[in-house]
Structure formats: structure tokens, C-alpha cells
Length: 162
Length: 336
Image (cartoon, each protein chain N blue to C red):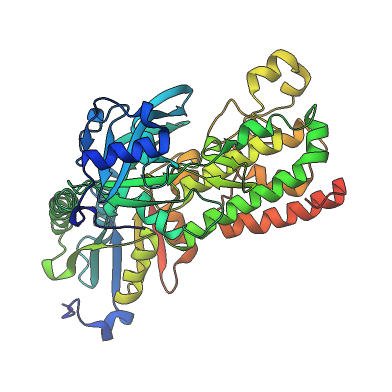
């Protein structure tokens, strides 16, 4: 059994370390289930479940207290979702030490760029994202995180699960 | 600029009466009026009342209006025309109204917020920029951020455009080179915001005023913001695209109008030729006005339903607009 811990960056280049960007959507759940099917039972795979919560601008809230509450609520939703995803992975034989959950709250103009920063920092060899299936018009107005990652990822494979 | 209103003594009623008399004449001093230092309940602020912000006093006049989504003349109860009793100038007072709502542009739902903080911040940022409305802000006794805006003499830019030329061809060859130069200046102004990490938030053609004194176009109303996705400025860019299509077409080229009046042109249109945000408007204007240069039409097509590539930044758009401007100068013999 691998003795790798998630702090052991020196071994990352020889391990199979996946970074899975998730939110609380059904789409993310489907992505995690896909990975569970694919990698369940393997002992040398490490999965970081990552969610980025963009720190909302103060402009969105009448008071700082309302902003803090929004962040607390958002974090609680993601903690619950992450716990569920961890259970899905554990159910197929992945062990606790193979799974890391990270909730990152930070200011960010681009979620895609924030995900890729984490990938680089943690030297993950595969980035996995779900695709929300947004319309042409929505992509025009809001942009697409999976497209950003596809276009800008370096030193990793990108897996887009639909 | 900002100042802390609450620490400064407010003028007395006698002083206010004397100031009103000085600027409007003794006969116009109202018999009764309220002096309001806390504007939290903006419905309390009536005609002829006086809002005091520290030592400054503003004599309240009418409401401002907004023509949004076809609701022309909808009153904005939190936006009041006022006389600054320090110097008698007409100003616009924007009181605090927090609002969150969902708007739809075509099939896309966008969560929008009205933020006094954002507008105050941008007023500071654009204080020396000619293409924006100017003003300062102050807090009332309850801490509400009140924006005190300079009144811009002039008309909406889109209304002026409709009067240029007898028809599209004359407009396009005689006036559009200058209009395009003015539009590019407006996009550069938005780039200035984006470069400072700010969105305009509500880019619409009726948010551009042609300042008749300074002869310059100025963006107004930047208290809206929106929850963005991967593309922080996508909604702003969409607004810029819609304005360009309007300017190049000398108005909206509407599908129902073509169906009714120009069936042959209507029959040449495909779904991909239409505006990505408004499917009853044509974006591929070269099909309607064949003398539009390809380089300009390519910019328009970025905002069509057939687009495969979108602008992500104003820089990308400005680069293509410069190419289009050069081609237009060759085509019309007019630089601007």
C-alpha cells in the first residue's frame, strides 16, 4: 500500500493524483460516480475533491453580516456535498488516506484559473471537471469553466465528464 | 469625494430658508418642509423637503425616470433631482435602495444587485475620466451612502443616432465613421473600468448621454452589478455588442419588420444571423446592408447566434474594432 500523504509533494510526479473540481450539483455527483466506477479499488490513486467558493463582492450584500452569512451557508452546503462524495468513493474501496477534501474560499475572477492554480500547486496529473451543459447563450454571457481549463491546463490531462 | 457627514453640524432651518431664498427667491421658500438627515425611508423624502448631508443641504425637486425593458417613464423613487443650496446647481441625489433580482436577457437568467457602495467606488475611480458621469458621495446620519451626481445636460446617445441621415446608406457613409470613433472611445472607457477590476454592470444604449456642453459621450448609472460566472466581464461585453449592432444598423433591425416589409431579405436570414441575446434582432447586418465592410461585420458576428468565439476582454474587441475602423476609412473616405 502506498504511504503517500497529501503533503508529500516529492512523490506526486510518480503517483496518480486526480484533482476533481466539484460543486453541489447533480452534475458533480455524476462526475464523482464516474470516477468511482473507473478507479474504485485501486490502491495507488489519490483524489483531491476541490471546491472553489469565490469570495463574493461586498457589492452583493447590504451589510457585512449578510455577506458573512452567505459564505457560512455556502460552506455548509459544500461540506455536506463533499461528505457525500467521499462516501461514494469509500463505497468502492478507496480509503480515507486516498481522499482529500478541499474547500477554498478566495477572491477569484475566474474559477477555472483558480482550479488550475490548485492543480499546479498540488502537482495533480489529471484534472476532472463536470460539464454543466449550459446553452450557447449562457456560455456567451457567463463563460465556461470547463472550456477555460481545457484551453489553459498545463502538465496535466483534463477529463471533462458529461 | 467621500466625506463623513455625521461629524459636521447640519445647517439650521433658518439657514436653509435663507439659502433657498438666495437661490430661488424669497417667494419660493416653502411654508413647510421637512429637514431629513436619515434617508433610510426614501419614500419620506417629498418635493420641497431638504436633505442634509453634514453641512450641505439639498432642496429636493422631482423624481428621475427610467425607461427599462420598455417601461418608459417608470419613476425611480430613490433618485431625486435636487438643488445644492451651497451653490444653486442642479444635482441628482441617489438614495440607498438595495435590490437583488433576476433579469433575463433572451434565455439567460442573470442575478443582479443594486449597490450604492459600488457606484460610490466607481465615482471616485472615474472622477477625472471624461466618458463617465461624475459626482461625489456622502453618508447620511444613518450611514447610507448617498451619491451626489452632477447633472449632465444633453440627450440619450441612441436618440441622436436615429436622427443622423435620411436613410441607412447615407448614415453609414456620412456619419457612421464618426459614430464608430465615438463608440471605440466608449469601449475604451469600459476597458478602464475592467482594468481596475470593476464592471459597469448595466451597459445599455440608454445609459449613454451625449453631454451637450462638453461634446462627449458619458456612461451613466453604474450601481448595478451581477454575479458573474467564468467570464467576469461577459455581461458587460454583451451590452457593448448590442450597442454596436444598434449603431451599425442605425437602430434595431427587427425580424418582424423584415418579414412584413422586406420579405426577400427575410428569406436570406438563418438563425445564426440573429442576435445571440435577442432573437428578434439581426446581428449579421451585412445581409441587410451589403456595403458594411467584412471586418466590421466580423465584429458584429461575435454577438450572433452563430458565433463560435466570444470576446472575453475589451482588448480583444478593441483590436478588431481598430481593424474595422481602418477598413471603414478606406471604404467611405472618412476617418472619423
